[in-house]
Length: 157
Image (cartoon, rainbow, N blue to C red):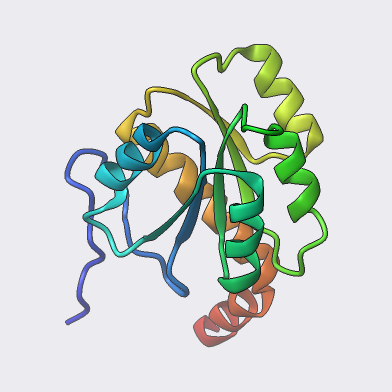
């Protein structure tokens, strides 16, 4: 009998992924953002890394395979756009999610047009974070491990 994937009881969304683990890098000068994300995903097998600024984030990106990067809109110094510019040319660039207390239509349109995956409003909503991170991870996985999809389909035939 196959073991069923873990389900987050509050959202009904699977917290396990079929292949590699979900690795999330939270980039924010606000410790409360990191704590909120830890509370939301802490009970899963997802791994959370934290950075308070761009330099720390770049260092973590070079030392770990990060699949999802959740970035505060305004950093000190810089913004999420500076983060996007720094990850754009990484071989397995993470999917970028922008977070802001002012997550309006303008930010959402700008972020998606420049290459971000999603925009999340703060304070973080449990279901919204899980859904956004899960879909961002799936996009990252599909782009960085396309052979995994092919072999899954080949095995099914």
